[in-house]
Image 1 (cartoon, rainbow, N blue to C red):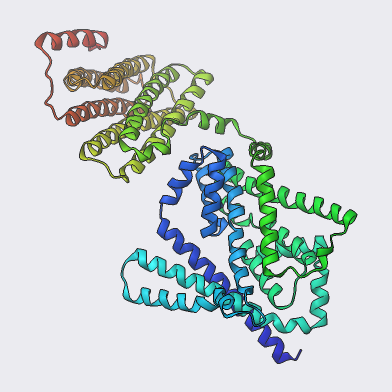
Image 2 (image 1 turned 180 degrees about the vertical axis):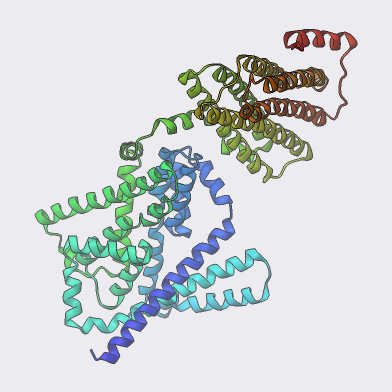
Length: 585
């Protein structure tokens, strides 16, 4: 070949590859835009059953690249919404679904060599320009986002098919080049063929595109089954790259999901190759020297994936076990899994009233954890027991995880259509969850300040410790009452807390006066004043949040405060006031 012919071939090949990849990406992105956030919800709904997940993963990858499905699955596993065992079925299905692209591209081989007009019309390269024109017209004369997305799909499909045709046409002169034929024959070596498939997929980051380029070569220069089989298997092994890249910024669960995809493709393709070539050594398959053609490559691609489904779907639990051996669960992760609010199931989102009921139950669980967190915090500052400190930290993490899960779930419910009553119930719960979360955050903040204070060698006088202990126990009792009465939705809670607040204000005033006297007398160090004041204000803010929770109950019920009788008021003043009385000195 002359230099001019070589340059024409290279530019034509690169142009075809560029059009092919661009069309594939446009089509995939447009399909994602049409589906929107519903894809995530659909995946969640079907993952309870591995076979249903496999079916959905297959269908999704038929319309999009398998990388879209696998990357999304990695994200769901990383967020804790999907379990590893559930993700396995989806990923196995995604690999099968991507074979549809090869079958679609094989239509370009129909009608070759002067076939009938009907077969030529079936070629995508023939009708693709008409689809492209239709898509462009729709883009020019419509403002609807959905219509424009559909138009983009048509344009992307057309560009992809035109790119396939350009690739096939540009490389056709190579069939008369002996050096190129020798190079292609070398790919019959299974090790070299697998390596070529891996490298091609790494370069263009799409196994479907790599196999599509191989099909284009098959239509022009001839590719035997002996060449195609290892290249296709190598491309499928390397298809895990997108999922692995997506997991780099994810947690360990996201990395485990990406490893499932990698292990499945490596085991499936290497297992197939070993069995196939061992049999080939014994039997000598005659078709290995025959031209595969675009259809033959698509058929083999499908065969390997169907075999993988038959073998691995019944053994779907094996892959998560292998992955967890590669990346074992740490103690912290086990604690995090134990702190998952499983009642906040994504499946319930389809029924907002029921989902809101689950939030109400989970909010009560958050309240219990916050109550326990505060009690453990008070015990920890009264002693220097390391075990007690570990328990406090664990409860703090648990409260934070519960709060994060509840907030995220409430947001997802709010995106659903619901009646005004349901929206009001959700708003009430969100406000209450926010109050309990702020109480937990305040406890964490005080605990951090105390830890820093202790590390610097600071300490309070015995009298200051007693005063803070008394104030803390008073705040704890108010929080205990709030959690209990919130569960009962008691209308009197707001009035009850008002009585408590009067007593707490008096306690705070007396404690502050005593602390000032200690500072003046030198019984307490001046540098302790800031932390002492922070703790006292923190207890007051916790009570403020309790008052806010009581107010939410009234606002939600749309009733006025149920006032206490004079006798009830007097009883609370006497019992609570006497218990936490601080005498002036």
